[in-house]
Image 1 (cartoon, rainbow, N blue to C red):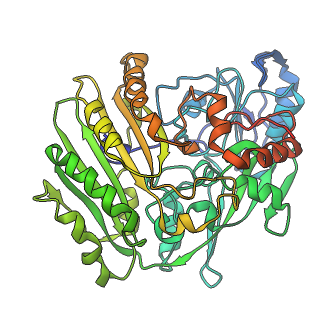
Image 2 (cartoon, rainbow, N blue to C red):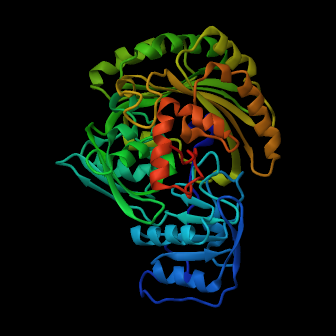
Image 3 (cartoon, rainbow, N blue to C red):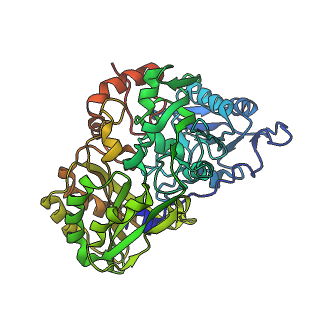
Length: 502
């Protein structure tokens, strides 16, 4: 089933600000506490081994206010983990940054030590596992979280490690909102730079369409302000180009007037209604009011049970909700219907899970421009039960405000799509990962021909470089030029990677 229903994505608490610092400064006394350390062997981005001397690590620790952790240090085990336990990786060192100065110091260290393999962890939700790495450096932003709102200007400033729920919490007190994802404990940094679909996107656009400016630490360690007026090429690139160009330390987001009470919830039907639901979706989704966010789930539990779920959010005037929802209710008698007046903050948190470490997850995804009969047949024929895994398909509906942006206005070119389609499974941690991921891959092979490109925030670990190039379409040459300017050695490569070029 889809992550928001079965999976209920979550975040392992990092404990970043409560752990004793083996290297670095305590946040209270600022006393340097560098103990004797051995040299550490690490790898660069191109796989070459390098030795990080204890002297160099101590010098890094002296530059940062946060913690520098090695594998033998208290707190390392917790800090290295990400949302999906399928990725059990061990960085050579972890820098737990508390601010921009720490981030710059860490980037300088990675660059000056041969171009270390570099991962950046914000929320840790990367489906491809690229927010961690083996034998490289992780820059952990979980201690760098702050949201500031100017209600008169309708602006929010969000630091790079912040979670989506914190943004909603601060903005909704003023009856303001911006479209940010569908799970509150997702990291803002990865979500926004990858495009940023959310429950409000048909109404207000993608997250990148509401990005006014960003501060970015690029590969040379320089903090650059990016906006339409300043470094506009970098500003264009970070809007959909992912983490290719640096680490965004602050996002300035435009906000929209919206009461915190919306009409939302889940409308569930028996799986026997799956074909009818898909036919209804194919007809209604392209013409639904843009105030109506629609996510359609098809779910098969390991028990053999299944259901079809419409995850809905209507953010327009309440008087228009019933008319907008009426076509979906005509599907028949629902198994459950909790669509009603709801606090948007609670709606965004409805899929959170405090124990994501109990299950592993794998998905594949692609954009679709329509939902033809052949695709409906393939979706239903391949979605089968297995006693050791839960399987799901979901469609996140686009259109509306998303489609009114030109394909070359931002790095993300997919503006004329019906939906992002994803198929996946999750299973108990400890089960053989390859067996279950291979089953999803076989299923996806029957669906992929109906897709065109993919949402980089749903990229799986083995996605080929050619597929990454293809998904950026005509925007790729411009992205390659920007990459060469700001990251000529490809220091930031653990993402939907754009290689430097001309």
